[in-house]
Amino acid sequence: MESTQLFQCAFGDAAANDDIARLVSSLRGIRSKARDLTSRIVTALPGLSIHDISHSDALWEVASTVAGPDYPLNAPEAYVFGAAALIHDAGLCFEAYAGGRNSVRNTLEWRDARGRLARTGCPADDLETEADFQALRALHASQAGRLATESWQSDDGDIYLIDDRELRDSYGALIGNIASSHHWDLDKIVTRFSTPRPAPAFFDNDWTVDSLKIACILRVADAGHIDGARAPSFLARVLQMNFLARTHWLGQSRLGRLAVRPDNPEQVMVGSTSPFPRSEAFAWWLAYDLVANFDRELRRCNDLLASSSVQSRRVFARRRVAGAGRVRQLAKYVETDNWEPVDSTVHVSDVSTLVHGIRGKQLYQETSDSLGVALRELIQNAADAIAARKALATAGEFDTSIVVCLKCSAAGEFTLHVDDNGVGMAQSTLTTDLLNFGRSFWYSERAARQFPGLQSSGFSPVGRFGIGFFSVFAAAECVRVFSRRFDKGLDDTRCLSFEGGMSLRSTLTANRPQDFGMSVCTRVELALKPSAIDGHTVNFADFAYEIAAPHPVLVAIDGVDV
Image (cartoon, rainbow, N blue to C red; front, side, top):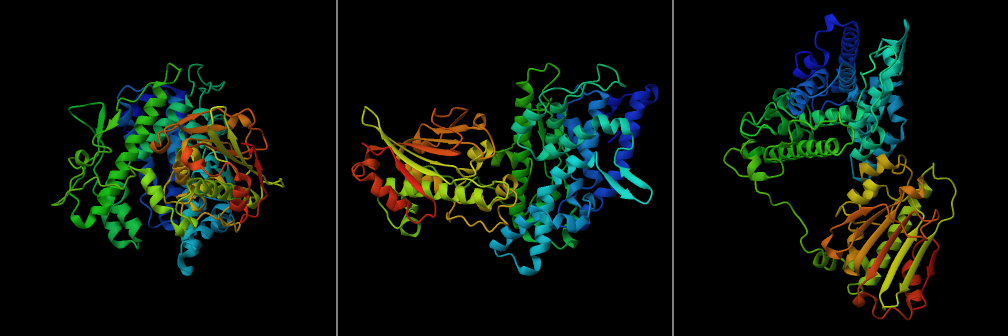
């Protein structure tokens, strides 16, 4: 930590400045306690790659390489970054929680994890320990947000990670938020850290803290520390791991330390210290994903810093990771032994053909009616969203509502929309999970994070295949999805538009229809193809009621005078 260029430039000669000496002394004290705390992670999660003090120290090295030799970081900013780096993963052990293991097992996150694992067929003997693993992963970022200010009780009185009360009061909450932010969506970081923090009264006035800049440094450094020090090959042989955990270890164990590309100083390189044999092909692809994630975080944070109106926010010296996202290029750095990785990732080039091909009797009882397929899917999704909201203890009582509306324009063009007042979707759900082909959002860890307690509530969605939303494109020229979470206001409504239909090229706006009020959480609007509506205009109400009949939610049919 202290030998890195970033540390030396930020703190300089601590002996010559009492305020800097105070910050460095406090940081050393935090490090000593964090070292003891993070040493417990390997006991709680033995299959996890290394998350002890060596990982926190290494973030300084990665940050120094990525940011560059003259990146502007003052002493309080370096202090906040260093403290956040020390505690960002500390929540991965039971000792980080008052009440220890029992406290973790009483959380909604643990109960949700157990319910999710039970549905996937996890052996009964492993349910609780696997739920421990998933719950600690789900909780650790939010718990990091508390560690800088909360205390542990002892016979000698309360113990804090930050002994210096003035520093704890001035920077503790900010340190916790930045430590927690390494698991936030980038949009949340922009919202929470948009304005630099002024200096406290006991420091120089120009010692402001740009929390957004520090959050970006932590985020990129954490994504970029993927070398073999985090997964020693010896431990990979002696620890009892399942296939996925072992693959993750092997994927990192052969990676060397981060370096700047000699012929292109705007790029960093991640290379292997020895080639991956054919027997470790899965591990190579894991390394490929780690490098791609590092590159993605680096590019996104640089874009964020570049677009900022705050002049002191400079982009990092390094802009890309060499070979990231390109199989043949990365294989020049992350080498293989007598085999060649080929980018044959499954992708959907003709969604229309796929939708028609998979919507047979197993899914829908019929094979030819694209409007019936789409309407059944939309009503089913709406009913699931309402059932999810009812299952949440925080939702309260509400009158369930699904409204199906068919309208015809003066030009003879038909528009169908289905409204519901279920849980609704946040922006991240719209852009990430809505079109996640083959995976049900309701059973994912993302759903557990967004709606704690849902997966342990007994909620059981009707949807089975996770194909869902794709079916609407067979009936529509244009698709628009308007949604907000049920516990948010109208200003949080977002519209995801697919103007090109099957091309799945989308735009995101804050638009909403004039009649989209607080009684609606999600509206899916389809500009129907003439072939889809043909034959349904006369008896549409009866047609829609028949589709809605199996669902235990009252469905209103509106606007059918065509």
